[in-house]
Length: 107
Image (cartoon, rainbow, N blue to C red; front, side):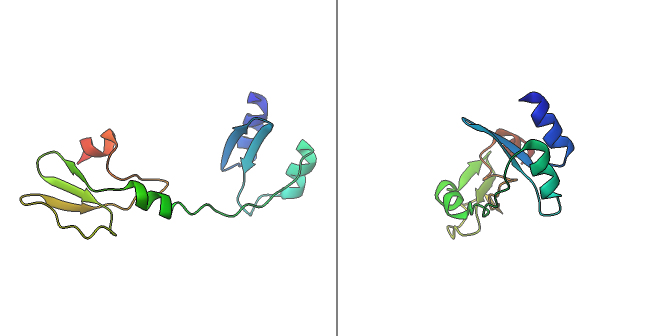
């Protein structure tokens, strides 16, 4: 599996997921699909992007960080508590809600 993963990374995969029945690789539209399918004797399947926003909105309550900050996503209209600065952060697949320790340390 490691050598297959390495080959797929060299071919420009955007990501890999190990599943019970094999390996799923993701590529953008500019990749030569036919060559990859022929090389690995597999089929190409298109998938719709997953919309994370409903899940993220359920999991992103405001958070207090330190003594001075109130971090909330843009859809939360609750005002910052007294003597706190409001920081608006919308979580995405690349950046979270402000709950992770690395974000809190930066703030």
